[in-house]
Length: 596
Ligand code: F6R
Image (cartoon, helix red, strand yellow):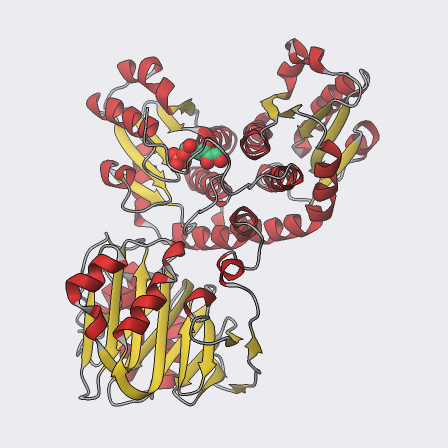
């Protein structure tokens, strides 16, 4: 996700402490490297950066002594290029008279870097932040004035990002926004710009929220906003932020979990853009296609994504996959795998010991091991032959939400590519997710209130909604401390049906193609006095048979499971609150499990 901050002041001063403090306040977004640059009075740029935590990098490079009127700092969360000093941001242009940093992802990074090298520019890193700087340099070299160069660069840079740049011999900073967050702060004697409010609020509460397609020109005395498309001046009055810092860090939501649930459409969008430009996807697909057996391996929520992935691979790509819980992989499959087999090891943290043990056992047998992880630089990303990033930014809340949906989307994308289907169809997913979150919210909150007296329930699904039912049940157990079992709907009659009594809640997650089967299951519950809650697309058969329905937007059998998990996440969240618990930090659990 990364974080950027830039400031323009009216006098030459020690900007180091301001930059360090701003960077500290963006750490909640997650990072592996830190950098700062100041544009000094003597017309030079002071750039200091490295891999590591802020305090360590600040001490190693004495960031506190950095002076100037203008400064930029950046926290990097690696996507393009390993965490290293050269890939850390900010970056210089070829001659060292411009400096810039970005957050987000420039998905045509590799192609643009090749073009810049061919055009004779000095490209020092693999990082896409440097690509943003050269994208401006290209048009400056062709004789455009600086603002036009930035506007033209915006047209060349594909992806979701926000970018700040400054040059020597000038008294301004410039910033653009496309997809990623960008906020401006204004006060007497300075203006600043950042990916997020926490770095701005200690300095000022007068802010302007920048919109996509806008370029901001920052001077010590004020800011100007222009349209990137036609350069026209945009008038927007500053607003005063009254929220507390805690509320701001949670993006105005009462809990990180709710914030992260609502971030799902945006991180899905960013992931899809990133996958489209990823060379690693080609490497993974090539190896998968020629493999003998294919395993998807994970724990907890990540394992549920593996099951969803296996269903998509069979249904879309006609390729059988064995989804397996990581610890069970060791006794059940590892002794029999060979160098002809491929495993995709899936983990939000990339540090789950159970997953790393399975990877070690597989590697000993010569199996090709790929990773899918959110935390770049984690052990999994270092141990795997190649890995795909989940692109979710920091997931703070212990219950995984946005990393689950992006894991499922990654598998869906790979299945589409395997089958040669048009991946642009997947671009509907983020909008459908937004629509779902809006549509289900009030009904789910009411359902949570009415379920509160129950300490026991089931969540059932079939086919691609089976892993969604498992995931919904896990979320409910994890943060409400009630027992909720996730199960294949057809298994319910083989034993658990005996639990059903008057009003006993059973949630059915219905894929549109499985409605007749789900309706049978519903009737087995309702005819014994149980309460059947159906989660699915509007359907007269579900409507007529279930006790109540949570209606999802029409999306078809492939996207439906991704939408169905959203009301279940929200249900767990609201039920947790009904019970007076903190959904972000459930008892007995930790976000990263580094023990056997
Ligand atoms: C549940 C949850 C856990 C994790 C599991 C694996 O909300 O977060 O079940 O999914 O501990 O963690 P990772 O994905 O980090 O390997």
